[in-house]
Amino acid sequence: MGNGSTAIFPIQIWKKKRGVNYLPGDRNYDLYQMACKVTAKRFFPNYLNLDATYNQCDKWKADDPKRYEYEVATMGCRTRVFENRFGKKTSIGRGNLSFTSVNIVRLAIECMSIENKEERIAKFFEKLDATLAIAAKQLHERFNFQKTALAKQFPLLMSRLWIGSEKLKPNDTIESVINQGTLGVGFIGLAECLKALIGKHHGESEEAQQLGLKIVTFMRDKCNDFSEQYSHGYAVLATPAEGLSGSFTRRDKKEFGIIPGVTDREYYTNSSHVPVYFKCTAIEKAKIEAPYHDLERAGHIFYVEIDGDATHNPDVVASVVDMMDKYNMGYGSINHNRNRCMDCGYENADKEMTKCPKCGSENIDKLQRITGYLVGTTDRWNRAKLSELNDRTTHSL
Image (cartoon, rainbow, N blue to C red):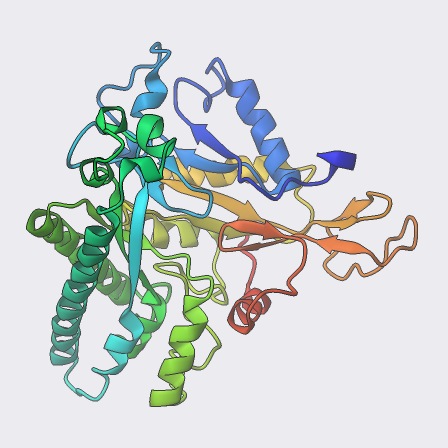
């Protein structure tokens, strides 16, 4: 990058694999060490764990120069492609077609008037079942529209890039090719959903954690059922919710009022994450969030927030990757502080920096991560995401 600035796009992703680039004896361990140094200074790369049980393929061999054909891939923010119901298990030549997100918080709020806890939870699952069926049908109808497109409308994509596209003639529809893509059923607000149902979120009690896992497992099982029913590849997505978290909350707040721990903030917590304001260590956060990754096959991510300057401490990054390895997480990274003077290039990690101590310029770039992406300004962030940013707490390592 010009003048040594941080590249904010595209997101770089490091594929971590035992026997290749993770342990001290691995032949590319030196590159892994360099990746940790770069992350400590530049936020990226993020880390994709090829050793996670659900990220492995039996055909993968370390000495195979084409082993990349059997490796999972993820888009920068979290969306994931690997399993394939209709062809080769690979991330190449495939993609996410569409996803629809469910407001599980609203479903829980609608059940709060039921005093008996068991009946309240049972009613919630009844509502969730019906809502998921609507989401699956909507995605199917959307697919039926997408499939009518002709191969000639996408001359590169539908001739060389998607699996099976080389067999298509210009006037053929793309249905047979895109059905190897995925349809995501997403959700946000598991924490607030649990607060509405039993008064605590999954970071606060083991009971809530077990209920949270039951909810997302139910969604995973329903997606498997939908895949059979509609002959598509449905999967659960841990929705990024850049704008949705605020719009869902505003609607629910308007209808149901302020409910402590549920609608009393400007946003709902992203997917199955522990709330950003909840104080816990990085390991505690990892233990809570890790089991959800296996259920969220359409995409997931794990973040750790650290305070201060990580530039001279790449071991911090390595410790997060170690957590991913230990707790079977699929994808993750760290957030930290980074400021840059856009006039002279001076950098530091001081949150309060408004003026460059080197040249006196007030042209300061303050890097922040929204969902998966870096931005140098929060001017375009919506009110919900600004509120979430202000609420973020750090996780000690």
